Image (cartoon, rainbow, N blue to C red; front, side):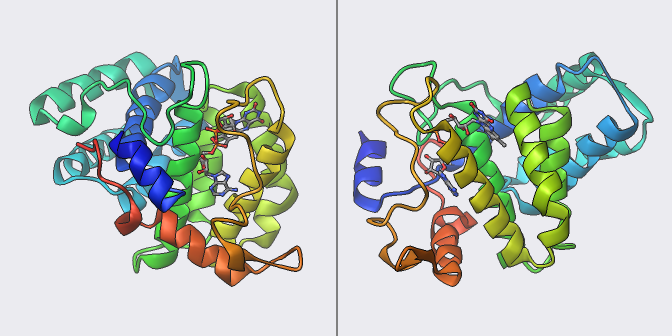
Length: 254
Ligand code: FAD
């Protein structure tokens, strides 16, 4: 009820608890379900971990865990999913991290039925937080770093094969030619997500209680459109107001 109240009062809200859930599921279940990682797959994991360390709102113990995982991945040339899962379990138990305790509830990404929303929703939310943080943080690396790492993750680890194929298609059309600033990176992901929303509106996978819209709605951001045209600096500001670290709701977070 606290979540409902916040959402009805504030509108688009991202929850740190959902991000933590996404990260845990991605590392344990998606990376952990790879049989054998080497070459480009292992590189995609390295780049994902770098971006998480740089731009995910980690707790102190979460940072320690990410450092340990990164050191390990950098010291090997091949890795099995099974060894990865063992490593995660071992390191987690040493740190007794509340952040990594198994949790089944999503907050902002909770569907009206268990088969709706959930993990893919929390992954999008995480990706938006990562691109927005690269825009506002001083330690941002190159403008394309975050999207390249996201693309590597989606290509090699995301369990939804159809989603991965579509995302790779979108990336090959525009990502590499267009991204030369952190602003463009945030906007590229926002536009890409809207293309997916448009394609999936009315689809059987759509939660009837959360219809797909072109985001943000006019109600939530009246200044984001002018005569039907996007006002990009307003969109950027709106995305920051939802996805920057200090905008995240801490309800239910570790
Ligand atoms: P989601 O689309 O998951 O969005 C989560 C939240 O993000 C929304 O509630 C809203 O608050 C916010 N949001 C919505 N649009 C935007 C935007 N443009 N910019 C910023 N924030 C926004 N499913 C398929 O069936 N086919 C696919 O090809 C496919 N491709 C995917 C690709 C990726 C990379 C990911 C992560 C998921 C993909 N999915 C795909 C899943 C699908 O996009 C949704 O995640 C899923 O249907 C759940 O939808 P949802 O209603 O929870 O909202």
